[in-house]
Amino acid sequence: MKNAILLHGTGSTPDSFWLPYIKRFLEKKGYAVWDPILPDAEKYSRSTVLPFVLDGGKFKDDTVMIGHSAGCPLILSVLERIGVKIDKAILVAGFAQPYGPNKTRHPILQPEYDWEKIRAHVKTIIFINSDNDPWGCDDTQGRYMFDNLGGTQIILHGEGHFGSDKFSQPYKEFPLLKNLLE
Image (cartoon, rainbow, N blue to C red; front, side, top):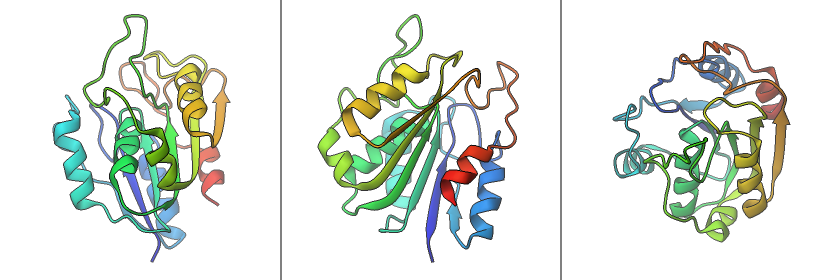
């Protein structure tokens, strides 16, 4: 059975925003979906969540990984460490360097990434960012990852963070993401 791993962002859960919508879609397509509540989600420290995902996730050649916000650099860290080439990774409102006007360094970020190792462990990688992300996880962050990994970069206009309680973006459905998974 094909499997999918959905990783939520800081301060959210598997029930936040479009994640349940995508989980239901994948399950109807025959995927076994792992969408854990990540430990310490308020702080989202790499030292806590990375071992949790590496130990709990199943990584095979037909695995699909989807992350939102801080779930995206977590996916990069996972891809750098696994010993298999997964099918697809989709990073939504992702980032891989300090972001925002104050260049905030999120605790999930690695000091640097081994882009070659990451690229070697995923067949298809897609970055989806908006040009007006209020957190700073915008199209320039997507471009930074795209420039280092290749793949596909999708920039949407006016879509914010694709889900945020603080900025009142419920984003309960995500048809584009569903289409990318067809």
